[in-house]
Length: 585
Image (cartoon, rainbow, N blue to C red; front, side, top):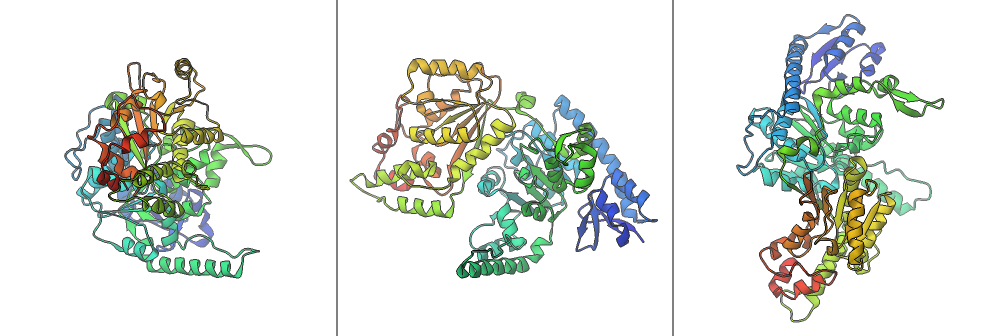
């Protein structure tokens, strides 16, 4: 006996005999332990397939009603797609957005498209087009319509503290960031007075799904085995305490940088896809890395079952050699048509007339525990009021340490800011082919950066204080004319007098002390001859001097635009008072 009905989050539920279990599995069905049935994405194709292949299924009236709604929805989505092609102005007001916030027309179209879809959408707009504000606006509209009382935001750890900044910038909604000790996190998960709950993928796994597989390995010491057992027991305790959170049907789930779910088999991917929600919004500038199965995995979160099972999907669309290795793909158009109602992809060049001349985007970097310990020791060496240079030295060393431990003689195995830069370059340069300017205040840091570029097989030129003036002009010409060059990197020596209009991304790996020089950096790309919107990306280490430099120095004429080189720290600090220096620390 088979039965079809609708779940409260919009999915089609299939109850069937055990010997017919492969029928819902064929179209990407997933077993729901709560319903004790299979769930699949609601599409007319899936419904037709189930009715044709199951033995005399009973179809609830709710399914027939939903089918009619689906037909109407698809007609509205087609109309919106046509509007988007012509950039038809959209009259959309978002209750809950601050009056100072402005949505561009392409963002309004994105919001309207997501709301019309109603269940899930993949926003794959290019970096710098404001995917986060679009997602926030969608969640606010759903709240205003009485469709949402909560929103779970899942993000990589490196971006977790960017979301509070975005939320505070655009709305007054309350939020909680799941972070800190296990006891603190349990309390944060349980809060009911907030609309946004923000968590990184790793802690989602750790708190709701029992954490990593900490199995004893050959060669483990007795102490190590005991430690692993203790960690696993604590993770299982949190999983039990937070069972109600794991089983909750969230009103909205936003997954940032959702391409991290591109692997079907990873625990992060499997567990995130177990979460239930009435609306899912996935954000990424790189939905796939040349492999169609990666897009399939991402779409399993956005709309489970839409692209059938992985095996069936690859049978239809993958070419393989004698050994079963995928060598290519076919019938891509049918995949594109299948996901059209829940997929958005806009490039900066496509919405150029709707954008300002510059887009600013900050990446908040969270230091690792070991980095945090070193930073605290460095910062504690300063004094609130001092006649000697100890506090100034502490400021300089703290600022340099945020860039990389090697700048102060420390041997750090990893560096959080450098890894964050790697992620941005992977998306901007490798995936989307943009040219980039990268600035650092320190020549030693440039040496480290070019090592990263070599590791990533990126082509670059560099300019610092030792680069002859004539060579700088030659590099300018070469960079602008050679499409194989990806990056121009340097110190303030390339922040004045040069024209790099072939680049439309400017990355400030660290801030200069002078706002005027920061403007000069971006003006290397944002000047006459530039045909694209320039995106300026800044990297700021959370809870460090980098968050406070602008607050202390804006409005102070502390340094002239002509001052270049690595001596700038000392020159600036000598013009600050003791209280200013203490505030920096």
